[in-house]
Amino acid sequence: MQTRVLPFSDESIAEAARLVLAGEPVAVPTETVYGLAADATNAEAVAKIYEAKGRPSFNPLIVHVNDLDEAERIGQFDKAARELAIRHWPGPLTLVVPLRPQSRIASIVTAGLPTIGLRVPAHRAMQALLRATERPLAAPSANASGSISATRAEHVLKSLGGRIPLIIDGGPTKRGIESTIIAATGGSLRLLRRGPIEIDAEADSGGRIEAPGQLASHYAPSKPLRLNAASPEADEYLIGFGSIGGDVNLSPSGDLVEAAAHLFDLLHEADASARPRIAVAPVPNSGLGAAINDRLRRAAT
Ligand code: TXA
Ligand code: MG
Image 1 (cartoon, protein in one colour):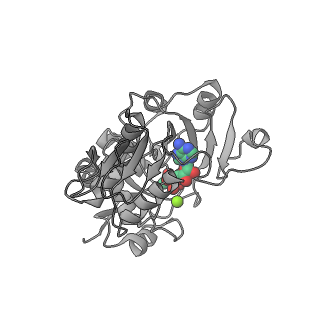
Image 2 (image 1 turned 90 degrees about the horizontal axis):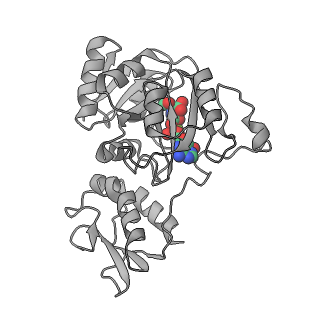
Image 3 (image 1 turned 135 degrees about the vertical axis):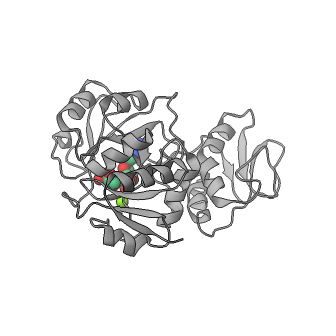
């Protein structure tokens, strides 16, 4: 794939919006770091973020929205969360709140969790892309897995060149570090990640920071799960892959992007089924398969 780098303009945003609505991830600056943005309501588009980053595991991703009204249609804000949003948005603050069940956010975005990280970015390029697509945009930092976050378009190109179709160049980012993350899910505020905004939520977490990706950020079904199953036992609900059919199938054609896109929905379906145990057909470990197998192994233990 050829990666184009276009300066931020009305035209480049229109092109980025066209790609996003066609299900492709594009790199775009925010005030913190460059993000790799995809339509958060399109599971396969979000799976392509993971494919491009070569990330060997699924983490819940931050979803970017236009304003607090849009955020409140996706997540449930209590008084404390709303006050923080009013004070700091647009800006480098992410709020983790309960996900509204009727929101159209793809389950791969939250990695199956019932909560969601939301923020209103303060950069004109990301704001323009949100308006042009009229979609919530999931966007982790635009760098390959294991390398540092990108604060310039050249960093993105070096890290993800050849793997994504477009980078919007908005110059160096102002803040240079990722947003502060605060969870407002259980009546109190907890600091999940330090960032540009200092907030007293630390008092609530006893000064201890929950490392990114740690806080209950691993959804797992409540039933026992068996991996690499060629066929199911009588009491198992089989999640198939490719030619191993199953009760449901991650991807009948063996496509790993499709499989990643369906993974969390199918785990939830298996968990809700009448059968007491879950089995999953073998998934090859190449490309996105590594992230899928990582999640399945965690779910199995
Ligand atoms: O500044 C930023 O926040 C950048 C720019 C691009 O906006 N984005 C960013 O996204 O850093 P990302 O996806 O790399 O950060 C995701 C982190 C996860 O590792 C996790 O710690 C936290 O956000 N997170 C997101 N949703 C969560 C949830 N539902 N529960 C707990 N943590 C969550
Ligand atoms: Mg990151």
